[in-house]
Image 1 (cartoon, helix red, strand yellow):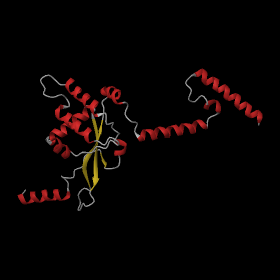
Image 2 (cartoon, helix red, strand yellow):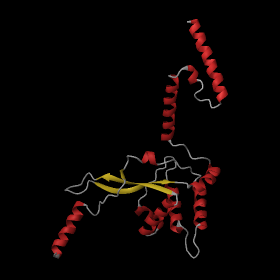
Image 3 (cartoon, one colour):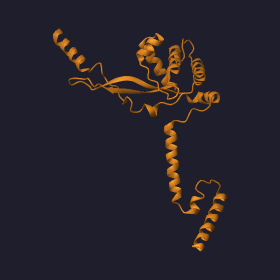
Image 4 (cartoon, helix red, strand yellow):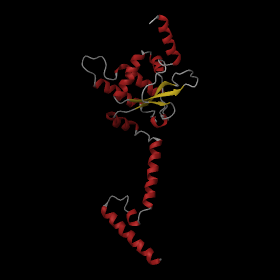
Length: 226
């Protein structure tokens, strides 16, 4: 292969975006799922969460090792994410380049730190893509963009954090799902015979029997009056 033909192949690869616009697996279209993924973050959560992360890192540090499983950079990244997250919506979508510039760390160090935070339960993310409207030729029409991140409290620290700041707000979609289930349940109960309906939400068996007898008596009175 001549230098000219190699240059032509590289040029075509760059033109069509095969190397620059490689899309990762399990990526979602930007704007399609973030509202269900993000969760509100209390402004008081940062302090207890950082204490939990620092304690976890110290506790699990191996003898002779300089850092624990999260590492110094991991703690820096976590603190930075808490400072830039939108507390009301949980929106959090910094690029790797932003974190590199903000913390003055190498790209590899930031990527390793993010992975460590995810592996140990302090962070989660979804990969995202967006359309390339100005794309020409036969190349890809989408490109990878920054991840959407979600700050998490690992199970071992959740009790401590919630004791300090209170339980996390219930997501709006969970509330909507609960209300929908409750409405469906009410509709189903309304279609049951009275003796079954009155005991539907009663766990005490004796009380359920008494209510069923009362329902039978009421229905008997209605039939007699009719």
